[in-house]
Length: 448
Image 1 (tube, rainbow, N blue to C red):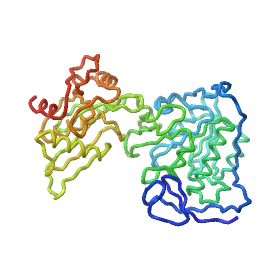
Image 2 (image 1 turned 90 degrees about the vertical axis):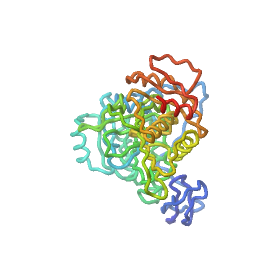
Image 3 (image 1 turned 120 degrees about the vertical axis):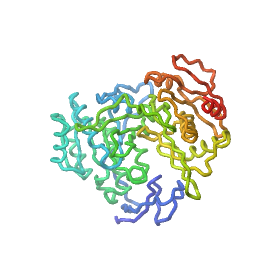
Image 4 (image 1 turned 90 degrees about the horizontal axis):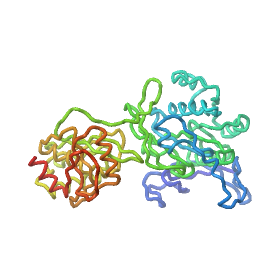
């Protein structure tokens, strides 16, 4: 058996014998990563450290007893997991270095261990003494948490067989070596083979496995995207580590909802759930508006800031933060088409003050209001909100869960809300202003 050099696409996992600029399967450029694998002979059989099989059962005879959720007692973490963890579940947690993955997972381990659940923590990047110092800082003194510094999957399997834990934590997957993969430790082939066997362990022994993964500069989990397809749940820290808040989003969940967000605040003693997260200030300036985005099953108040300034460059700047830049350009074109405002000699900057990126188009009207307000010097009251999707033709449509968004706005103390001219009956004490299109909206706020 000999080693063979291959190139693996970090986006789709396709394999190539030679390097090339574009992956033929997914069409992405510059995603091929060099790796090595064991080249098997025709008579050899690919080996796995764990073999998974089960008896054949009729669908009506299968019990759902093992799908009982176990709460971690960390409110925002339970939210992104749709209520808690499930036995046999594999959970991948990713984020940039230093954002708080290890801190959060150690807090989860402490919470689960308090329920007489045995936790085995494999620290492949830090020594046992380093992990002890972090636990000391977080005031964790559980007797049901066991620490081991292994980097070989074979050693991890032996430890699982001896200790028989209910929860296994791998921190991090990039440092674990699979003895049968033949690839380099942090290479795609090794990471994929290691994760496949960890998933088998979870299903065979019915234990919960948390896998911590680093994120590349492109925003993907290190290793091929196939890694995300192997596990049951994918959680991802979204914002920068320098910020106060940490936003954990569910990208995949076989046991619950996706696109849920959990919001944490980093403090001296770890990450603390921030269930009442919103950004509302008393400052009222042109170009500042408020709206409500719907993430998962919750409505969150966000602030939209826009700056329209005369440009001194041949090509005016367009900068959009925490919002889809492509559709933001369409909103600018829609404003130009339906109002007297022109942006050909103006720079336009738009920022969503929410600490996380959003694809919710329900804030389109708030974005348009902020841009128009900055361009015309209009100051909106900080108790006025804007909710609505805006088409490229300037029409305003109601977003999903309009009533729930309005309820959250009312709960936060807002007094007025601009919404589409919908026939939906809305029970609220707010002053509702119904808008037909951008032309109608511009006329109302300019003549106000």
